[in-house]
Image (cartoon, rainbow over all chains, first blue to last red; front, side, top):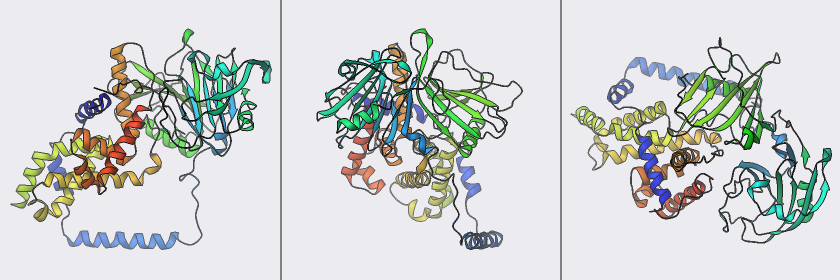
Length: 343
Length: 164
């Protein structure tokens, strides 16, 4: 058996212990078991009639609920920001953000929208490769940086290096590639695509964004939530939007964390997030907690005020913590981690 | 008599069923709902089910199917997991590794998660899983292989060696 299979088995066995106790199960089933009674039959008939009337009433002019199954802020999917720069990616591409072990701190976009984090020297995705954009740290030692040999500039006067070549990185086939290195920011943008114009379309779009298009700061040295001691919940009232700023899990030298992804959500999603966060019970913080992950949720209100909540994982028990700096809520399930859709 | 047999069944297997349901849906309240729903269905058919060789297998099948049906209703909530960083010490790495596995299993498609739970927690054979899910045995293997590919693609797990 592979070691990963062993880990999966051990993890499942460990978490099975978190299942609810069975001591009241029989009682609960007995309380819910169907019993044939005239009153129940009459009630059921009323419900069925009500549903039928409702269906008839709702039919007619088509209704459109804009919050249903629509991805929020779809227009922003073209612009991917990462530690102070943004790039346009072709609008036909889906974008997916991940952090790969081979290249730390990477944003990958792929024609089929899937995450691609293969190990060195082998392909994990045999699908035809289209345009792929890697945004990564210069110190991660990726091969794209070696392509960038010509000195030039981008917007705002950043001195950069730019170059082209071919790469087999992560693919079975050799594909055209290009790269821009921005030494001042410690960044590499690598692109592989079927043609040079497709590569240039991405590289030409690189522009600095110290605060990105949804309002996330390119790097932070502290993750500062904004709490209110009097509030009984982490997200009071009715927020009108929320922005999620994802920062690196581990701080870099000097305690700075880079922005690695951001996303804005509309009012419906903001209120959904608020409901989920507020539904998690407060807990006393434990000094033994080892936190990882660093996501800021910045809720905005109609009067212009904002409320920031930080969400982090707690290593070990698989729990997730949300805090406004004053109150701490701990989720033993998956609600805070899955708070809003990733890309 | 039927009620007594059913009560015995719940007393004997209820905790096991709750654990499987919890591993599938990862929420205590939902796990209780799943198991209660399954048991109520069983109770309605107890005369035929209770006499079967493996009423527990029947309950498990109902739970898995209920779970898959429930997840289908929430398909839009299927999520991709975010990065988990790798702190320094070996011990901490191991903790994070297991945390990552738990989170990543939670982010798998419902059938993939069900296959892993049935194969590695319930220790069913691929044939038994195929029978339970109503698919072919190679399909089970394929789902499991893709699930492991997804797990391995995560940075926290990419360095886990192939062999135990």
